Length: 77
Image (tube, rainbow, N blue to C red; front, side):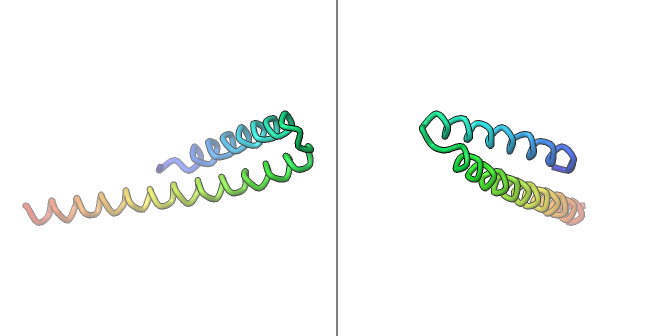
């Protein structure tokens, strides 16, 4: 969670995989490539935002846990 470059790269690679898999599945099902393309782009953007927000929240939770641990260590001596 502390390595934002890794999070960014994993997000991009995962989004590309989801994008092409969705386009492939929609083209097999008889849908048009334009429809598959626009749905794929929409889901790619949504995946990017959700992943980024999730990692931001997890990073803040980790910081709060470490602060709580420091406070408990000060109280116990």
